[in-house]
Image (cartoon, rainbow, N blue to C red; front, side, top):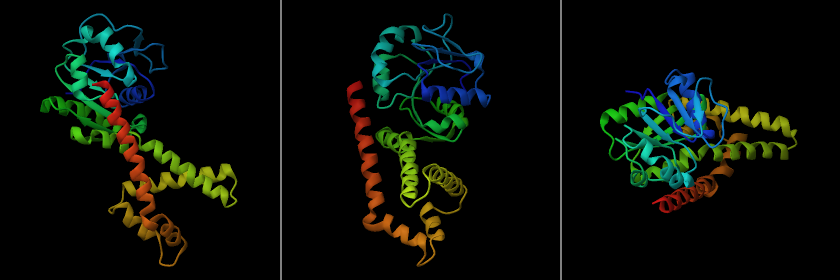
Amino acid sequence: MIPGRLWLIGCGNMGGAMLRQWIASGTIAAKDVAVVNRTDRELPSGVWQARTLPDGPLPDAVMLAMKPQQIDGVADRWASRIAGVPMIVSILAGVEEAAIARRFSAGAIVRAMPNLPVGIGKGVVALHSAGASADVRDGVSALMAPLGLVEWVDADLFDAVTALAGSGPGFVYRFIDALAAAGTALGLPEDQSARLALATVEGAALLAAGADARPAVLADRVASPGGSTREGLNVLDRDAALVALLSQTLAAATRRNAEMAAAAR
């Protein structure tokens, strides 16, 4: 079952994006959400927020959504208060399930790695739990479904998924800017080139999402033999330069996730 009552410890950009989509989709009622933050945030109407957790019985789930480096301070302050909560969902990058379990007591602990488009229901949420029951996993899957694509992954692949999907929007934004800058270098006005690049990526992604073929096949369909698209693809494909660059990018992000995990153990 989807958790009915939810407490969030921390509610920054990512936690706020998830919360707004849950409420907008009717998955969770605003009146059933409590947020504890260091300062008030602009949250959906009806959400309770304060500097301390509410009195009364525990909720169905607590989501850890503060900065990863704050975990010890949060545990010192709130671990005893939420001890025995049926479920903890953590979106803390680089903090492993075992590290959470050493600091908090819960019926189940689930790691979640969302990316920012969850705020419009077009995100990705990677999930992992070594100890959660099938019922808990089903409930978490249903909770995350309104946010976008939901994938359960093995623990040893979580850092890689975080690099690909969690950090991926940042890399895509860089690509959009680079595409726009390349258009400007050819003489297009900067603002026009930016609009064209953004609309091109948006349309191409939507088309790829609904296609019956892989993006590589779609690229070949666009590229006529001897045409301009083929000439451009030849540059991107030369010595697999684009694949090599992105492999290095994801490897760097994966290493950093592993470093953060080691620091939190």
